[in-house]
Length: 502
Image 1 (cartoon, rainbow, N blue to C red):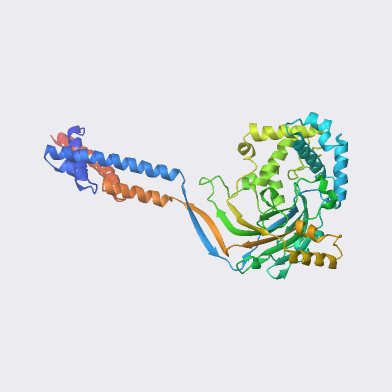
Image 2 (image 1 turned 90 degrees about the horizontal axis):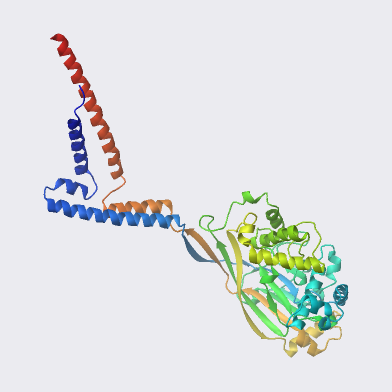
C-alpha cells in the first residue's frame, strides 16, 4: 500500500501553516491568519517593501565591512621628561677645505675641465640654455661622486670638510654642556663631513643615555652656536650655511629631509613629536609580519642600515640593485648594496641617468620593489616650525672673538667676519606632549553581526532565535514524512494479516 500523496501534502501544508502562524517574524503570520483579501494584499505589500529595505541595508553593511575602513584617533600624552631628537649637523657644502679644493680640481682635470665656465667638455656633453648654472651643477656632481667612492678611506674623506671643534663655538642642553663623545662623525652622500648628535650611542655602537627636555622653552632644549668660515674655498662654493636633519634616534638620518640654517641668523626650531600607528593589511598597505621578505637581499641590506626598518631606504637599495643589473656599477649616492665598483666614468654616469629615468618614469617603482620593501606600520615623525632673528649682536660677536682667541683658533678673524659668519640654533619641544595617531577598525565582525541583527529585527522582526524556527520546520517536515511512512507500513502489514486470516 503506497503513501497517499494528497494526504502527505495536506499534512505538510498544515505543519507549514502552523509554523508560519507561530513564527516570531512579522508579516508572514498576518498574511496566513487573516481571511480578508484586502488585508492579505496590504500585509504582502508591506512585507515585500520591508524585505527590500532590509536586503539593501544588509548588503550595504556587508560592503562597508569588506571595505576595511578605519577610524583615526588622535591623542596627546604628556611626557616629562621628553626625549630630545637626534640631530645630524652638516655644512651646506661637501668641500670646505684646501685639500678638498685640490681634490675637486684633480677630478675636473681628469674629465678635461680646466675652466668651469669655459669648458668645451661641459658645453658639449651637457649643453644647456643655462650653461653656467649647469656647469656648476655637473662639476659639483662629478666631485661628489668621486668623494663618495667606496675605495676612499674615512681619514681621506675627513680632510674634505670641517672639523667640528673648529666651527662649534658652544653646545648646551639646557644648562648642561655637551661632551665630545656625544658627536659621531659620518660621511653624508650630499654634504660630506657630518656629525650625529644624541643618537643614544657612542661611536663604537654601545648604548648611552639620551638627552631629554623637562622644561618648556628653548632653555630646556638643545642650543648650538657655530662659526661658518670657509675662507680657503669660498670661490668654489654655491651656498653657505649649515644643514640640520632632525630625526628619531632609532632611525637613520636622511639629509634630504633636513633644513638649511643661514649665517647671521638665530634660528629657533620648535618641535612636535608624532607617533603614527597604522593597522596592517587589509586595512592599509603596511605589514607587521615581514617573514616573507627575509630571503630578499634588498630587505636584509635595509635592516643593516638602521635599528628600525625604513621603506625609503629599501627603495634606494632596490634602485641600486636595478642599476647594478643594468650598468654593472653602483651609485655612490645610494646606500651600499653589493661590492661592485662605483659609476664614475662618463659612460657609467650616462648609464646611471638612463637607468634612473627608466626606473622612475617607465617602471612602477611600487610594483618593482614590492617584493623587497614592505611598508612599515609604525613611524615616529618630528614636525617643526621655525622663527628667526638677527644674530649676533656686537656684544655677542666680541664674546665669540674672545673665546676664539682664548683657544688660539681666531685665525685673525675680524669682528665683521665673526658677525657675517656666526649663527645660533635652538632646538626644543614646543610642548611636552606626544601626539599619537592610531588607527582602529571602523567595523568589527561583531559590529557587522549586530547591524544585520538590528536590521532584521527592525524590518521583519527576526531575532537570532528566529533562525532556530527554520531548523524546526525542517525537522517537522522530516517527522511528518517519517511518521506517514511508518503509518503506511503498519497499515500495509495489518492488511496482509487480515488477508491471510480470510
